Length: 228
Length: 219
Image 1: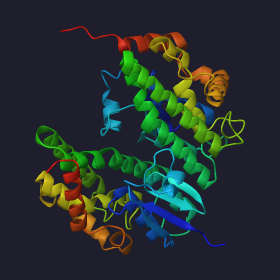
Image 2 (image 1 turned 45 degrees about the vertical axis):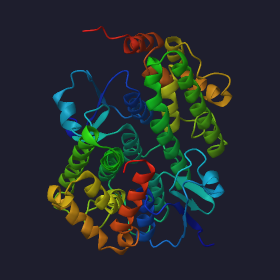
Image 3 (image 1 turned 180 degrees about the vertical axis):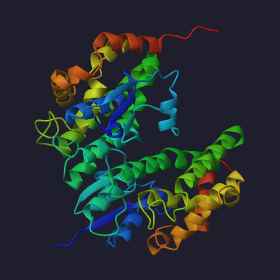
Image 4 (image 1 turned 30 degrees about the horizontal axis):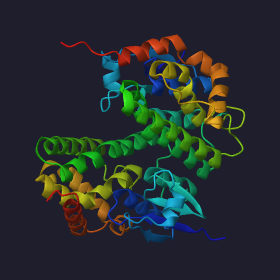
């Protein structure tokens, strides 16, 4: 009989990109896990018990103990299941650059994505330009830091930045459709090539939500709330 | 070949202090460069073109930006002495979580305390003190967050202690009364040379904040 405590459980939400990051990492490493879909408007007692500080998904439970925050979870996974494929490079300087770009994504790109859905007119145009600039900075930076390995980070297999990028951009077409914009496109050729390569990867296709489901979700997020 | 280490910094920055403490803990000799943030040096702009911020650690000509990333880098490169992160992966994840908590809560809430008034300031004060109390709980009976010696969370948090006179004066709060364990922990950290040499005097920081408030038109 399997030891229950060594079981890996992931509490998440299907449309949370942070949850998708962890799903991808677990699958990439071939780690069997139990998935618990949380209703974010009615969080379970278990989730609140395991993440009392932030009360958010994703939470990874391993050996009965919780780990919170997607980047921290990914580093944990890479350290505990330290077989290939590695999520982070071995060299400390390269690791610092991966962490830098992960931090850039989380500090700059992620917080700007949702508001962009809600803006109109000139403000929306400005937000689109800002987002395009951030993607450009990301592209330039990654080209400089990892010149050998533009499509797929660790060479032929997916690494941490591929996971971040894949999750964010897999459904770029859905985002474009709902916002009537074109943020990821041929004007950022390296990113465009990278994102399209990731979209074709079986692991991404297998894990990330499909286009129509995402469009429907994004539309509910921008639907005006009725006056009460 | 000797390592060349430079730190681009700004003396009152708690983020810069984190890197100073880490370098001191590891006994690493380095060149300290204080930046004028209204007139950033070409070196800073070259080493951190994305954020244009301090601190930047430069090791053999290569920049490492973002204080916690720099502290982890220092721990990984000079891994033969004074470890800052624990060796157990779960303990490491916990240390990273609490350092991230410090990043998310302490600086922003503290900033509200010295830059705002009225309701916004009251909210900032509550957030700030609640965060300190959570950290006290996390510390428990241990002398340091790192256990018997200072570790990653201690390094990420203790710099803010140098700003306490400013928070207390402008926020009209008595932190020692609200969080005595926290103050006891901070004083214990200051007994370590790596910390006492890296943190400026609270009065010096206070005078700096008074000047900043004038510039922001808060006086």
